[in-house]
Length: 445
Image (cartoon, rainbow, N blue to C red; front, side, top):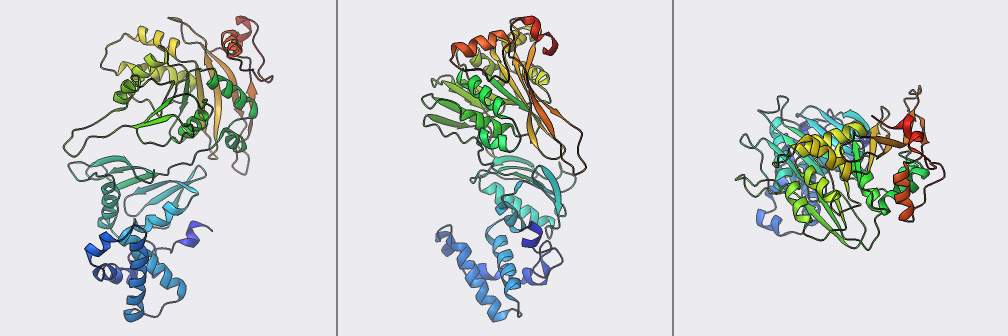
């Protein structure tokens, strides 16, 4: 059933966006009839049922005659506002929605299947939107006001939340909720067309042979989803440490330590950064380090870990191409408080990074692996990327879909030898380049 069918439109009496003539009078009544101390003592699942019963009695006693559907909609709306997130509650229950974007009280957008659409919903006022925002941030012991107008947090249920309010936001209080994605296997991603079977077998070999892998892509391209799927290829006997800003990875291996950064408290103290966690993880005897995203000076520590015995580590970075990913890693590493010349950082990347997997989100919302490239340069040599898989897209069809085909190329001899020594076969679709000259036509400058 569509969201429009499940949620009353703004003009309906039950108040899909405005309070409506029915919602406002009943908002406080059920709460008045249950003492605050009694409400706080109820188990988490009981307040909603209790409020629904109380409100049902009030409507029967005082309210107008309503149809069964209208009565249910009114009760649902009032209880959602009293205990939940109001008009956002049904959106959070809709599994097809991956992102909720509130651009002030009058504009609510969602993302479904990679496409953004506006919903016929709105908050009754700025105050009501602010109440919803305050209820969200209070669940993670944060506050939002003029002195602290930006909040970035993870809800206990896993959703990632960003809030920014006036005076920084000129369109009014803005709320963005990114749904906690369920973990997908690589076989499921094949079903979605994100990659093909040949790429799956090669990636499995690269991960198990302990190649250091960087997953690159723009926002919303599925980097965390792919990283989670790739981590499932790590052997169960290894000690894995995951490091994230907002814990999203869901590894199934038995020996996993999950670390999450911490923002400063209301006094501005107690902040623990990704860099702090990466440094600490090196003292925890990891076999693999998995970093949800490198975005600052921690990239230097990550590169050093990759090149000093912690092979097989994985991380993501924001970049628009495999070549850009290398440049961005170099720039991020230079943001460290340790002053290292760019030339030395270049050498470090050549030593540490083995594979870059580039993800792209197409106009039809599809997310695909558009390139798998092996870094085949050494020391101070210019970066040399050998593309071993590429998605070649065709023009968009009249129905708005983007189709194409995956092409495969031989990996460099050095990488092929490393896979061979790790007893990891190369799928026949790729083959092996016999000489360096065979790579000349597909190696980046």
